[in-house]
Length: 150
Image (tube, rainbow, N blue to C red):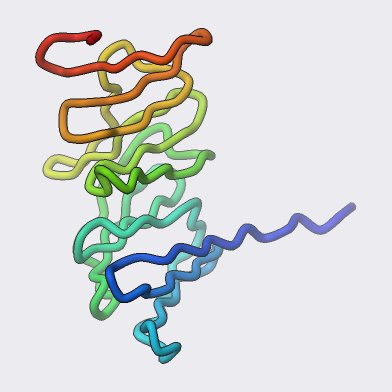
């Protein structure tokens, strides 16, 4: 039986160019100088995204929020449908990461939930709060929460 390859996540973030490195076992953050900022273990990581001063680690069935300063757990909330997929984070709306799987959805906190904007689609890209690009059935739509399809 072939050994399953471990997925590694690499993301640059912040104005200084910090580096986030994660795999199924944990998260490591590096300063722009290359110095280690933090290292934390967390089993089963599917993906990680930087949301403001927090790291949102997605593990099967849960969203674990960690401090980007020291790696301490801020909160852990159940989130159904987190089994396999990837996070897409728009540079124009980084506060609205999208979980792309069989049914793409926006990741929200307070309360923690997955939310499908408008009619949803095969691909969801946030432009700003309440404004989305939705790709569905070969068509690209601009969706605005206040008026619908624009």
